[in-house]
Length: 255
Image (cartoon, rainbow, N blue to C red; front, side, top):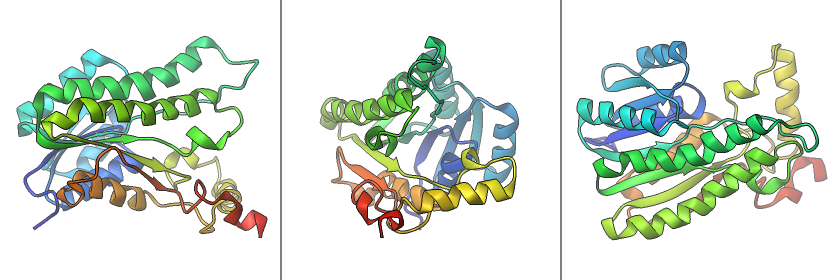
């Protein structure tokens, strides 16, 4: 029997990358999964991959009414929710001195406001003992240049998770955060495979384990937090980054 047998999960940003990989793993472990995303073509492709135990709903995570509609569709299809993985996010360059207000605010709208209102939309339908997983990032603490909005948004997600723990613990609902590091997903792909390989090699030199992560490795951490195996894990941050956050001086570039 799978680790999520009989459970229903909502995954925002589930049409590609880590979200889609996690959806596949959840279904393999017995869950019924509803994914959301903004791109209709990507959603259609993802739905074909995921099969009959899934639903793909077009929705903007930063639009509260859109997320309410998506949640209602999910509940209509499969019943109440056991798992919410608020994974949708964007990362736009916001260099100091040349960033437009709209670009900065869009990052915060999707990453912070979107995560909050995804949970709020799901709240009336969350079963006792449900698991909420938020997506942080090592960018919250590594000071990467030109990423002020993204870093601030992911720092906010980690702070927000602690508040949600306080509010939802009386209902037995758990809230935890997965913090990915550099992971091989389509957002890293450059115009040529050679450029992509060069970027990956450069990233690998900054990671103690000497490589980027794979989406499956992030999904495995999400599965742990979604499953009953983590029934007493509350308010945790699980960093999946090959050691880049905890021991940056252990990276190959310093050896």
